[in-house]
Image 1: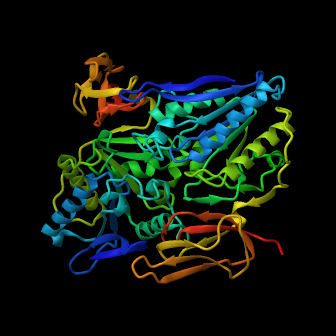
Image 2: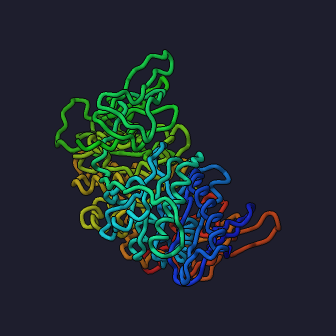
Image 3: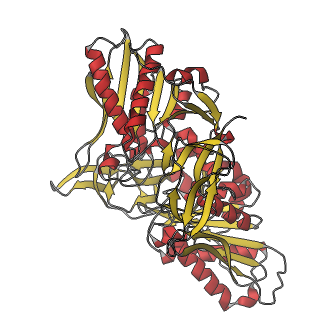
Amino acid sequence: MQKKVIYEIKSLYRDDFQVMGYEFGSGENSVCIVGNTRGNEIQQIYVCSQLVKRLKAMEEEGKISEGHKILVIPSINPYSVNIQKRFWTTDNTDINRMFPGYHLGETTQRIAAGVFEEIKDYRYGMQFTSFYMPGKFTPHVRMMKTGFEDIELAKKFGMPYIILRNTRPYDTTTLNYNWQIWETNAFSIYTTSTNSIDTASEKMAIRSVLTFMNKEGIVEYQGHDGYISSVVDDRDMISVRTKMSGIFEEIVGVGDEVEKGQPLANIINPYEGEIVETLEAPADSIVFFAHDEPITYANTAVYKLIVKKA
Amino acid sequence: MIETIASVGLPVGEVLEIKKNRVQPDSGSNKNGKRISIVTGIHGDELEGQYVCYELIRRINEQRDKLTGIVDIYPAMNPLGIDSITRGIPAFDLDMNRLFPGNEDGDMTEYLAAKIINDVEGSDVVIDIHASNIYLTEIPQIRINELHKEWLVPMAEKTNIDFIWVHGASTVLESTFAYSLNSRNTPTLVVEMGVGMRITKEYGNQLVDGIFNLMREMGIWQGQTISPRKPVISDNPDDVVYLNASKSGVFVPKVKHWEKLKKGECIGNIINPLEGSVLDEIISPIDGILFTIREYPIVSEGSLIGRLLREEVVR
């Protein structure tokens, strides 16, 4: 294992801002794995830390294949984590909206450029990331329909789902999109949680990444092959939205199977305690995403459901 | 007449409302049927537009009989942000100016964006007033996407601002308020002036003078107006030189905003208060004029210190 500084900025009063990378094996740039870009993506750092620990042991056992290099960057943004702020410490910009970056630009553009320079030539890119809304996910691989996406390759992770979605204007500045433009096969991997630790999905993620690398001949790993992934277009999922704001009382959680008409959650009047709304499943389905905050706003998609095929 | 254009119940005993004030001729007769909309407060930390809204209504009310069209004033597109000194929409931590055109069936933020667009769409001119951010002070200027240059520059020239900056198209900017309206044929001018969290009355008065001039040109104001100053216009990216901090420290300026500088002149220092040392001197790389200058002293490597417009463009 080689530990190296991927990018560094001197600070006036804080310790130096450093992006640390962990390299395993040597040879072609085969796989780059990135953890958090935002300060609340703690699960994403945790997954990477467990992967570093695992790869270190595998390297010592000679299980990294000859001619392959794996780079793990657990955190592109330790500064924001340390002050528990989601975006960049001073100007609140999002590093994952700054790619491919600009080395003469603003601070977060420079960080993006400095990191991207080091990671853009990898064959496979994997990013542990999070959703802009608070909630828990069924673990999945998410791909944008850029024209470069390779679904058959994504199936090698053996995650329960592969979600495809259309690109939006802001996507052009994400790491995933730019990796694809630079001809890296890029995957966004979602585990269950973001700012809390979920060990079950962390273990699934580690197993999935190792399974993928084993199938591509990059590591030697024998584990459970995982799932035959279901491929779902994001547009085919049903969003269940609140009509009312209030206290959110969950009845079913992520991964649960529900029948049409089954109650999913209640919205409670915060002063009088009455149930003002009960959300119901519009079809027989599986809960793919579930809101996990104690309050909710009106019009919020608090559940995303994958409809069961008849 | 004050109207609520969108409202959403918040979780605990409060309703979020976005309001506008429709100012129209007393008789109710809108002679030429035209409408100007003044929009501000999309970013909750930008307050320069607050004074402009106030002053515009105040001056109209002084000579109400001179008004012959509709003036719609939207002072607070992001009321929760303005209340809590938050640039984006609080709780969602989203930049409201990346949500347009929005979606009436979407979440609260998308819903609000859609209601705003629906209400403003169809105006004959929209002025979206921004105030840079808390880090940089800007000379009164209008920024125009090159896609809409031919159409918008002649309108912008009537508004008494100092500078018109025509910038390149970018995919990310497609989700802004101005782009959404311009692409629906509602002409929208984006003003940037002053600095976040402050009000610069001088700039506010300058723009209000310009808005009246534009209203007169539209035929909706019959009162006296100033003749607008002639703005510097730049549509070549090479006209603008960016100065970024090479070191993290505290920036102390030596020059004033909108000052003409010679190549080699010192703009300011980045100092280290702990050591009592100068970490870097910021030197002007060209002959030019400083139209953006750093306001917030703390800088990190890369922070923008200023923007210069080349001397040749200004002449």
